[in-house]
Image (tube, rainbow, N blue to C red; front, side):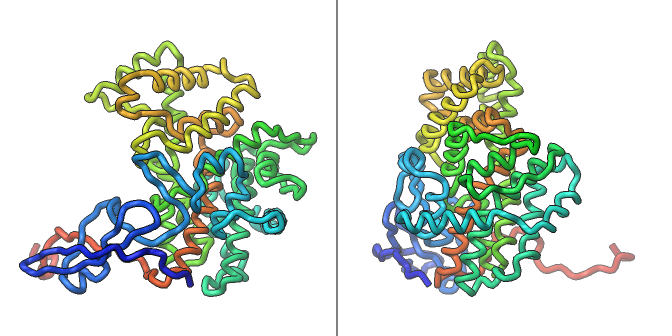
Length: 435
């Protein structure tokens, strides 16, 4: 069990119906203090009301920190731009799971373990054949990841740390294989088995894009870009899908079921579908000459059109992930010579305008990670329907780290949000003939 790291920071008082209640205040290592209301209902018979829980801390965590006003994102204290520039995805996985960057020996052992868990049970392939070929990859991944609990019975006991660890390794290792299988199934191509001599991201690219008739050569520029996409999406504090994983896990559900729940939540267009929405917007605009029309519409308060991929709900300044993604986006476009591709020309012109136009600067509507990652994934050859599946692949390690932390928290209880009930009061049943 992990000990609480929160520090007492005084007390606050609440006066309700003539009575005053003292509420403890705690401070984290960074960020705002929190008022502890755990005893409020028992002591005062009153709830707090916070739709969306945007002003409520549902847990204590030392994994990820966000300061939206200052544009800061930290994984275990390391800034996201530092990790994106100097690390790689598997090292970030180790950091998120275990709290510190690994030594050379630890990294070698972790890489070996993940690499040798990438295969999936052969019988799992039959699951894919039960889906229609045009099924959305996220629908396939929800079903297949949830089904892992039917194959790996030796890692379902969440009370056993050893089983939790092997389940964690299996999920990180097998998610690229499952995502690649979902993609290949949709295209009608045969499944490609992982190859142990390749790195994590290189292996995934090969499983997606190789053909049996010839050797596949990994382009290091493209692999670096996709690895960066994975790093930037690995965790993002208590967002909707992470909260879903924690809520499912609080009931004692097995890890595979919890991650499947996270995938289902991530599928929502307001969450994981943002880069997909950005690409669809670019397709709607179509050509560079139509951009001024859409810029005018975006500035018109009475027009429902919104520029997707600009600004961010959490980051009131520049999305700290966007700068690293911008670098990789342009590296991919340069490597593949795609700057003249019509859709990407629209994207590049929109980027130029957004970074120079006073309206966008004043409103802080800078291009965000979804804008750049959408362009990058399109250039890499992934169809739009795969974007959210790639997001799920990257976010799996964050979900697992959060799930493990929750299970080790002595204060954790089954999730049970309250409600503000506004329905009918007690009524008597009336037989149908008398209504």
